[in-house]
Image (cartoon, rainbow, N blue to C red; front, side, top):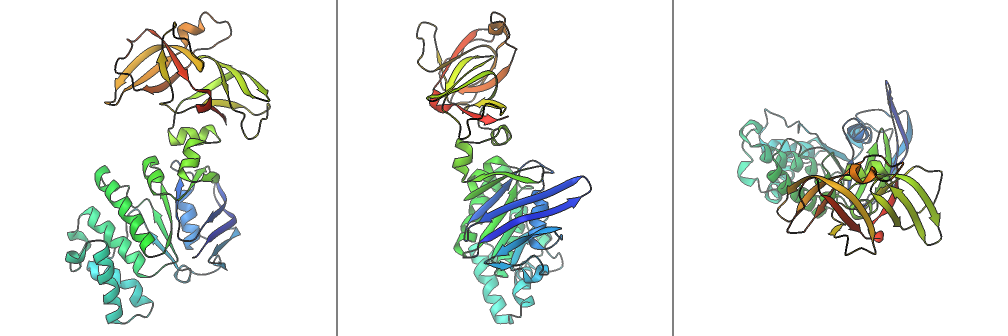
Amino acid sequence: MDVLEIHGLAYRRQAFELRIDLMLPGDSFGVLLGPSGCGKSTALRLIAGLLTAEAGSIMLGGKEISGLPPDRRRVGLVFQDLALFGHMSARRNIEYGPRLAGAGKAESGRISSELAQCFRISALLDRLPSELSGGEQQRVALARSLAAKPALLLLDEPLSSLDATLRRELRSEIKERVKERGVSALHVTHDIEEALALADKLFIMQEGRIVESGTPRELYDSPRSAFAARLLGRGPLVEIHALEFGMAGVRGKSAFGAFSCPLPESADAKTQWCLHFPRQAGKLVTEAQGSQDNLFEASLVSASYLGSGWRLRLRSGPVAGSRPGWQEAEMEVEITDSECPLPGQIVRLAIPSSACHLVRA
């Protein structure tokens, strides 16, 4: 299997600078996730050879490809706008790569028929792109890219123009077809659900750098920075006013109350930390019940019904007024209780210490 290894890849355009290191195992589906303008598409174009890097190396299958022209890199690229040849039928679009590589008419036809069957577009092969729906055009573009037998498939937000239902249907289909053909893929998106659903390995990008990488579950369960936690939308980020590191864990204070949590990997008191926990981790308790967990107090600003429970917007203000030095803060949490307090009421939220952890601010 062809492993993708990138070391010190550097590119500068005006005030923007990209510098990344990346390793994607062979036969893996990688996803670059980040906000618009962070360099995701630029990274793909550098790998494909459509842009020239200032420094660094790109290794694919153990071979340096940085100095090769795009057509010799064994890399397929599916753009957001698909770039299908409008004057060619779907069949001729798919056969274009094999014919360019020297395959005969019979072999090119066999490849297009096989891929058309995989993507369920056999009945559409004689139509022009303008006669196809958005989802059908996506399938043709993916089949065309795979027809050239790339070692690596690069996908630059190919689903962004589709409606949500079709996007969910196609993303699982893309991964299945890519895996069936033993091809590695690197997919760019800013859609969190799409990234978590597709990735074998997830790379989080911020301002031209890959700041975190791992499996989707690793990054979602244990983000190491406030940026990653916020991007993944996992839950609240609570400002910390005081913090003590001990052998047994961490104790601290926030506008919502005192808390404890496990020690982070790097227990550095000089680092600026935030408290983070899953949005669904807490449960409402009464004052009489007390709690062995972290007990946060706040007033309820608003509540939205989700079907499975409630999303609460909480504000620390009324509690903070009786506790010198605390500042007003807000956070959103979700509860599964069938009944919900009324706006303006004080709520007490118990959160297990094990669900809390510190992230770099």
